Amino acid sequence: MTTPQRDRSRPINESLVFDLPLSWAGYRINKMCNSLTSPENRAAYQADEEAYLAAYDLSPEQKALVLARDFGGLLDAGANIYFLLKLGVVTGNGLYRMGASMRGETYEQFLATRNDHGAV
Amino acid sequence: MGTLIAGIGTSHVPSIGGAHDRGKQATPAWRPLFDAYVPVREWLKEIKPDVAIMVYNDHGADFFFDKYPTFAVGAADSYAIADEGFGTRPFPAIRGDLQFSQHLCESLVYDEFDITVCQEMRVEHGFLVPMHLCFDHDDTWPVASVPIAVNVLQHPLPTARRCLRLGQAIRRAVDSYPKDIKVVILGTGGMSHQLTGKHFGEMNEAWDQDFLDRIESDPDSLAALTHQEFMERFGAEGIELIMWLVMRGALSAGASRVHRNYYAPMTTGMGLITLEERP
Image (cartoon, rainbow over all chains, first blue to last red; front, side, top):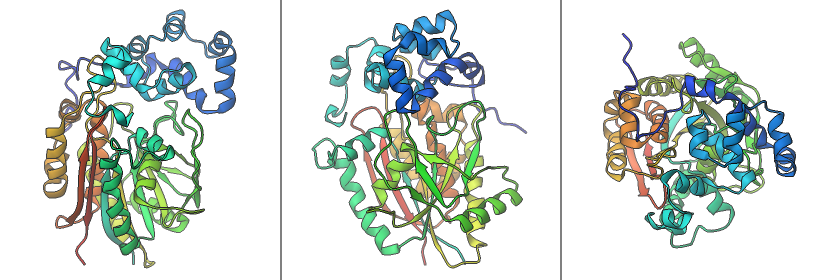
C-alpha cells in the first residue's frame, strides 16, 4: 500500500513545495534561468534583458515578475529556488538578498538575525 | 572483491565552496566548519579508499526538468566540472572508475532499481563541496568517484525508505564486485534549511542533532518518516537529508562513528558524521 508522503492541508513553513503542478506552471521561467549556466548567455542577458527574455516566451505576468526582481512572486509562479539563483547572479541578487526580501527585511536586518553572519 | 569500508554524511552548502575558493577557511566564522574536516581528510588518507560513491543532488547545473531522473548513476571514466551559473570552479576533472560504475549499474538494475545510466555527467557544488572537504587534490584527485544524483528538487521524490534500500542495493553491488577495491560512500545535503517564503533562513538545531543521533544508531526510524515529516522538521529544502539514508543503507548496522560535527552560522545546519565498518 502507498504511504502518502505529503499532507497538503499542512503547508511547510507557509511556503509552497516545488512539485509537478508548480514545475509545469513555472517551466518557462526555469528554462530561462537554466540557460544562464554559460558565460555567453549571462553576458547576453546583461547586455539586453528584454531581448533575452523574449527568446524564452515568458507570459507577460512572468516577465513582469522578472523585471521587478520579485523573487517571492517568481517562486509562487513556479520558479525553483535553485534556478532562481542563476537569475540572481546576473541581476546582482544573491541568495541572502533574495531571502531578506522574502522576509520583508533589508539585507542588513536579515544579517543581524543570523548566528554568525561572518559566514556569508 | 569490493569492500565497503566507510560512510560519510555531510552537508554540501554552496557557501562552503565560496569560502574555500576565497581562502576563508581560517576566519573565525568558518573555522568551526573547516577545522572539523581536517581529521576526516587524515583518516581518509589512512584508510585509502579507491572509490568514493557520491550521493548528491544537482541544482540545475546538469539536469533540467524536461527530463528529470529519480536516481541517476554515472558510468564514465571522467566527469567535468559544471558551470551552475557563477562560473566553473578551478578543480581537476573528477576521475571515474568506469569498470566499477558499469558493474554498479548492472547490479542495481538487476536488483530492480530502475536507474538512469549517465555516460556524461557534469558535477557542481552538491558533489564538489563534499569532495574538496574530504579529499586534498593536486592536478588530480586521490580517489575515483561514482556520482549518484537523486531527485530532491521536484516532488514526487523517492521515499526515505527507498533511499535506504538503494544504499542496501549499492552494498550488494560492492560486495559482488570481483576486483579488490575499497569503497567509501558519501550521503550529502542538508541539514535543516528553508530557502523559500517568509520563513527563509529558519533552521532547527534540535532536530538536526536528533538526525545525527539516529543516522548512526537508528536509521530505520528516519526511513519511516514521510516527506511531510522531514519537511516539518528540517524545512522544505532540508528534505535533502534523505540522501544520507542511501549512505547509511550501504553500511552495516554496527558501523561505528569516527567523527561528528555541527555548525549553523547562517541559513543551513551544516552537519558531518563519519562511520567506519569494523574489520
